[in-house]
Amino acid sequence: MVRILGIDPGSRITGYGVVETTPRGIKYLASGCIRVQSDNFPERLQQIFDGVSQIIELYRPEQMAIEQVFMHKNADSALKLGQARGAAICATMNRRLPVFEYAARQVKQALVGKGNADKLQVQHMVKILLNIQGELQIDASDALAVGLCHSHYQETAKRLQQVGS
Image (cartoon, rainbow, N blue to C red; front, side):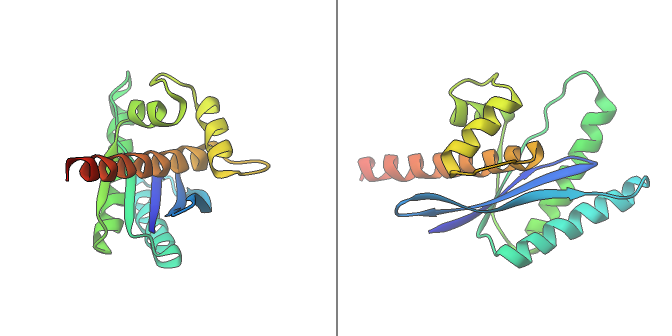
């Protein structure tokens, strides 16, 4: 069994999701959002670092999977997102956990079957795969999707290793 923390980084809202692989499949443990309260950017980074540290302390994951930043049109937004991502990674590395990174297209491909799926399609698949009833915040579902993607990649790597042996 492996407990995985998935992170969807954001400079205002950072989603998190905790899943656990079991012999019977993947089990949902927790999800939510770290909502930063400051307009001061360095203080926001500190709040992300502290929030991720608290989540690690509470749920004791063994691995962390995080979405990579991609460059779209707004370079300033991408830089801020990258710094928020860095704060989450530093909190994880501070606890000596391995970090795995996935492109948004990889996550969408792993869950929905197409790399250009929209957020609602990803959220729908997360709810189905983890048997989640009711509301699920979009940032939390994105984080759970990253965790699920990592779990799928790890399982595939194990199977390939068994075939090669």
